[in-house]
Image (cartoon, rainbow, N blue to C red; front, side, top):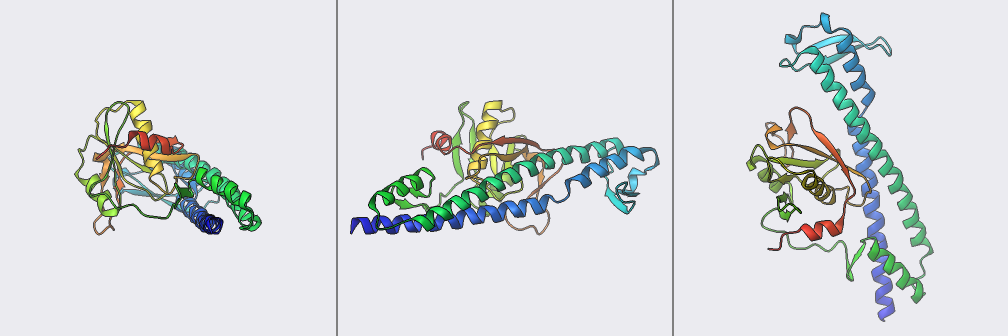
Length: 283
């Protein structure tokens, strides 16, 4: 009976893992769609530099011919910046999105490969083979699909406050648990603190309680940001880093949705479960 129970547990874990991997692929495809045509950003920056002396910034936009096909393209402008600075903003966004797109595409390819391996393992699984049951169980535990004999999908009680961590430099990092908590955490934080969120994927809002964090603190906080996101199972996750003061919530926006002004830096990290456990504050 014990073997039968173990087999059932392994079968359910494999089902959950495949479902979870398919959801990751879905999220990554959506992220690629959201980024869209990055080359258009480069084109807009180039056009602004080319026609810089002929553009009136005060209008807030300009219509210019796309040199790729001669079709008209509307380019929106920040009226507080010069044309050259507007061009640089487009170039910055182009390079950032291009890096992000490559990372997401690499992760998508790896995740698709993992899915095929998981499906093959499921098809070849013999629940009557006790040695295979134990072998696959160990693999699933290592892959975080089974946790100490409990399926990964079991939910722990939600904390009353954001998850709290302390970096190696003893800096407090708070990680939102849900959309409402994300909003409260982000909108009440010190404007000079640092804020993080995974690029183009769903995840927690993260606030670093420091106005001048070290590089190590930023990397550790970025790791936590990636771990508590849809990118948890990926190897390379891009994380946006900016000041809380750059953020704003559009009128009528749904819970957990914020936008930002200016530039964001990007840190690419590999989510580390052991690091998250080590830095976790014990309540």
